[in-house]
Amino acid sequence: MPVPSIQPFAVRSRQLCLAVGMMAAALLVSGRPAAAQAQAPQPPAAKTAPAPAPTAKPAPPPAAPAAPPAAAAPPAQTTPSKPAVEAAPQAVPGFWDPRRRPERPDLSRLTVIRFLTETDYPPFNFTGPDGNPAGFNVDLARALCDEIKVTCTIQMRRFETLIDALATNRGDAIIASMAVTPQLRARVDFTDPYYRAPARFVSRRDNVLPEIRPEYLEGKKVGVIGGTSHEAYLKAMFTDAEIHAYPDNDALRAALRRGEVDFIFGDAISLAFWVNGTDSAECCAFSGGPFVESRYFGEGVGIAVRKGNDLLRQSLNWALFRIWEKGRFTDLWLRYFSISPF
Image (cartoon, rainbow, N blue to C red; front, top):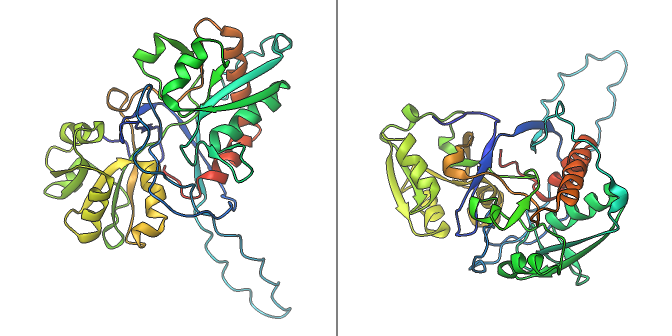
């Protein structure tokens, strides 16, 4: 059955909609402004290796609106007006259980971490205006090195070359939105997951539902990309819905804008960028909460290290927990994701 409201969620990987997922707790925090950037086709949320380069180049998410100035205090002898209702806080993923604090490994044995990452996968990895690596994964790698107090280098390579580069000791860790799969676990070890994306429904703004259950979509037309885990999930769980398969994201989203379908279902990170971008023309919004089924959406997104490199894997797990505990992960997430996919 689908899981309503804020809850664990799933991501899809490189073939436009492959997915990963596992249990996650959601934290409610306030958003903060991000640098405004141009809108373009949106990215998928995770990748499997090897895989071809994306057919379209997505752009980083747009800026969150700046906070309004505080209102002046009302004059004396007047009746205070009713406080304005505050906007709902941004939901930020939390993948770490505070009751299961990782033990601090012997960090003195680490002298440098050579991170490998993707060349062109915004907002997760891209080349910044100064020619240096940039993006969510890059900033996360730097935060981890800062927490461990170790020198950090970041090398950008084509995604399909990352596993071989790690195996031949041209790097120590891959941080490139790489989906954890049984096939990859046979070749590399992974840290704990550091992000995933839920699967979610989107509807036109005049048809938003606060909650979605199978009985609510009986007889409704639901669009999805054909041949994906999202389509398989709909066919298994939403048996009374009228499912319409589309070849790609452009066709799927156009069908919703034209009113050919009542809802579309897919990767929430990509959908969040679209809903908040110019291509949607403010037509649509999320309906209901996130969904997760591990047998459809996989395990999560982790940092890959060479098989048997337990010191580095444990050090990164420790550092991931620490930056989450300190709120640095939340700050980083809000910088890149101004609309919550959760």
